[in-house]
Length: 188
Length: 439
Image (tube, rainbow over all chains, first blue to last red):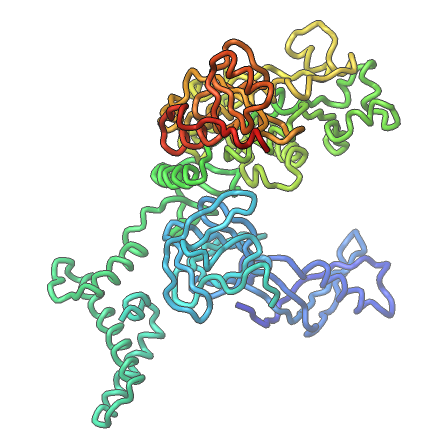
C-alpha cells in the first residue's frame, strides 16, 4: 500500500555548501540519501514530494558540519498481509516462483497447487505442472495459462518480513481473481 | 454453487457485507426477487452459514452432523490452509505455505535457490517425487557436473609460469586458437580455460539431462564459471551449487540436489568427495591445462599450456563420456523395448545398394538407423559375413554379388515390415522386382 506521510531526518551538511543555494543543496542531498531506501517501520521511500520545513541548523563541535532537522513529505510503499498486489515474475523454479512488485520481492510456493485465473475468468482447472527447460514455467494441462519469467500476476500477500534494508513477502495466487493477468509477449 | 464453495469467506469485511445484504434482502423478501438477486442471496447466506459452521467446528469438532458436503470442502480447505499447515519450508523466516513467522532453523538450507530458504525433509521428498515424474515425462535424468578439472581448468594470475606468459598477452598468435575457450577474468585475477568440446557436450547433454553445477569453489567463482559455460543461462538456470551450500565439510552430497537419487548421474574428477554416492559417480580424467594445476597434483611433466597443446576436440574425455551418458540414457528409458526390438534382426548383416542417394551419409539414413535398432549390423561394402543385401535394383554390383553368393537379396520394404510386425519376415516375400531392372 502507498502512503503519503511526513518524515523527519537530521541532515548533515558540509560548510562549503553554505550560501545562497543552501536549501537546494539540502533538498538534493536529502533526495539522494532517502529515495529508494527502506525502513522497517515505513517501508520503501518511493519519492519525496515536498519539504515541510527546515529547522535551525546546529553546528557540530569540532567538525564544522551543521545538522539541520528536515521535515519532508514523501510517498512510501509498504506491503501488508492480505493485500493484493500486481507483480512481475522474476524466476520460476520447482518450488514455485519469485515475483517483484517494485522493490518488494515475493515468493509464491506451488505447495498449494496453483489455481490460475485469468482476469475475469472463473475456475480454470488447477492442475499446474512445472515444465523445466530453457524457459521454466508452470502451465495448465490445456496450455491456456502459463506462468513464466516476465509474466504479470496478481497475488495476495500472506506473510511479510520487514528487515532494516529489505522487505520480503510470501504470496499466493490461489483465490478468486488472482493469477496471471498478462503474458510477457503481450504488450499492454 | 461452485462459486460459493470455492471462495474462502474469511475476511471480516465481506462477512459484514454479507449480513448487511441479508437484512436488506429480508426486508425486501416479500417482493419477488430477480434471478440475479436470488443468486446473490444464496451465495452470501451460504457464506454466512459457512462462517457459522466454522465457529461451531472450532467449539466442538465432533459436532458436524448437519454439514453438507460443500461445507465440508470449505472447511477442509480452510483447515489445511490455516490450522494444520505442515510448514514445508521456510524462506526469510516465514513458512512458504501459510506465511507464518518461523524461527527454528530446521531442515536443509537451499542457499543456491534463495539465500534464506530452508526446506523440511518431507517437502524435499515431495519435490523430488514430483520432479521425477516431470523429468521422466520429458525423458530426462539429472546430471551433476563438477567444474574444476572436469569442465574447465583455472589458475591464478600469480601462478602463471613464464612459459605460459603468452596466455596473458592479448596480441600473441596463440590467442586466436584459444579464442572462446580461454578467458581472462581480471576481477578475480584468474585465467580460465574451458575443456575442449565442452560447448557441444553441454548442448547435447542438456537434451537428455537436467544439469546442475556442483563445485567445491566459492559461490562467486561458481557463478562466474557458469556464465562462461552458459552465457544464455539455459543449461543451469539457478542450479549452481557451491561450497557454502554443502551440508558436510569437504563432502559433496546429493541432499541439496532436488533430484531423485536413483535418477542422478555425477560427473566428477574426485572420488573422495562423493563418499555417499559412489554408485552414481562417473569418474572423469582430470583436465590439467595450466602448469599450476599439474604441480598441485604432483605431475612433473610439462602442462598442456606450456606445450601449446590441448586435449583432442573429437575424442577427448568429454566426447567419450558424452557417448557413455547417451548409452546410459537410452538404456535407462528403453531397457525392455530396446532389447526386444534388438532381437528381431539379430545376426543379420546388411549392406544397402542403391537405397541412399549418392553422397548421403549412410549412417544417418533412417533405414540404416532402423536396421541398427532392430539389432542388425550395417556395412557399406560387401564381405563374406554379409547376410542380406537390401536393394531397389537387381542390376547393381552388390545385388549381383548377392545372387552369386546365395545371399538374401531383398527390397527395403522387408526392413520396414520387420519394424512394424516386430518379426523377421520371410525373405522370399520381398524379392527385388525385376521390372525395375528393365527400366
